[in-house]
Length: 329
Image (tube, rainbow, N blue to C red):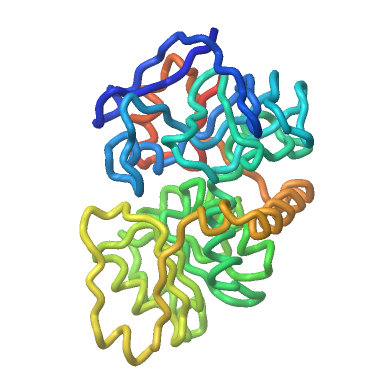
């Protein structure tokens, strides 16, 4: 038997339910994982709310990130076997697979062998965050040594990954956070500069730390009115990448901030890297080497049990965490 999480209606965290079912048998190209830990993501909350890129087919499963041990393999699986410790990357549709539960099926294309030196909880905290940051900063922006990168919502799991990846390539991460409460923790994880946007003048501070030129790269999950401030703080010809919409308000672009600076504004989704085998292999290689060296290190905000799946999603949505929210099995 397996315990799995499903939701039968679109809505809030209270729609998540635990069900006891027969453990699914892996089909060709699939494995079955005995899950030890789950990583939670805002994408999954949006999917549950019916606000994601794809609409859930009800009753729906949920979950991109699991870490555990393979206990069965389907036909044609050659590179993995029962007993292998693995984690999953987010390169599949949530309508095809969902890993929330104590047992989960996953396609071979989504598997990564357990990174050395990590706990299962840490392994479940890696791939959405680091691949999202990699896709935007390395894949799209081509961030290089000495460049300044602005990272709003820097205390999120993706924000922390972005700070660490920026340091890995020799760039200068400028962490943005609402108040100074998290300043020291952000410095501890590698932020070269921290700006508390509710307490300091964002544009003035960024101009100060960049010697007046502004930031060459902006990595924004918020959008809304604050995006105009980020445009003011950006350098001429800056690459501005939007990967989320935490603000309920749309981005309205002011022409005379955009035109004279010749800004390059684009969106980013993790699937650009995660669904391309060549790009994914390069990203995994860089991240695994960073983990092995200790220069990349996932931060866990809080752990819940599977029985607390509703509470874990409520905590995820309050946005106050520093790092990754996980569920242990």
